[in-house]
Length: 307
Image (cartoon, rainbow, N blue to C red; front, side, top):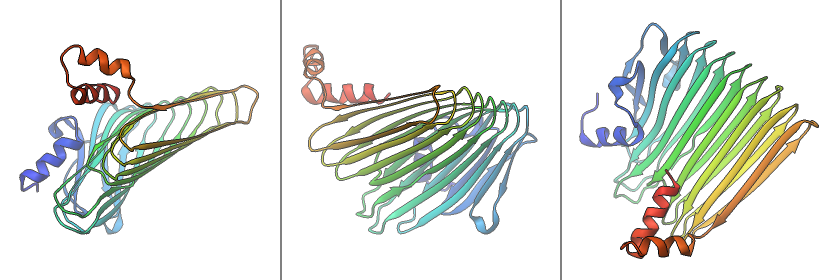
């Protein structure tokens, strides 16, 4: 059970909605499930050796809500979890995931979450993932999410990922294979400070006719932090892809974008856009003319950029 205010705060940070609104959920703390709820349409089955979960959503399930949060409060712990989501034909669900780490000691705490999605024909998934770190110790908070997606005909998935505070190092990898008429929309928002590092790697293969993807990355790197965004989009038939990477740097922050698109068919329409730079001077001047200090104006611009 959740026993203290630290647990509650971590859950509040990684879950934008009340846990009680979920039709099914599983809460994992320090490598172990502490609470689980299922219903007749959504089942959550633990894997052997506590290594993760199989989440089964029956076909034609409408508007199901699933919460799969992880919290870590033990310094020095490396938690690796494999969660497989089996989404039935024509099902429609919202999945809220993410990890919060509290580390007040001097050993590093790490969570490696491997999430695999199998979307059957006509199914729809909205997947929200948030990462958060806090604590006064010198031990780092590390998060390495891996997402693997297989999409059948006419399925769709929207994936929103957020990392806005306290994560010292993150390596995020997403791979997806899309069949006919399927659609994948991905939005990520990342803020790094201090000496933090964040790496994102997208690999999307469009195999089915009229498959499409839209990937948007918005990043802010401040102090001496570093971010790297790479994408590899392969179009093997008539399809559409649009990738955009927008970054703001301030202080000694650095952002690197590595685009790669491979049109392997005459009707593959693939686009990549990248823009990285400092906050525009005219934006600062306009907000300061309204009474804000320079720091307040910068904070307002960054907040709006990452919304």
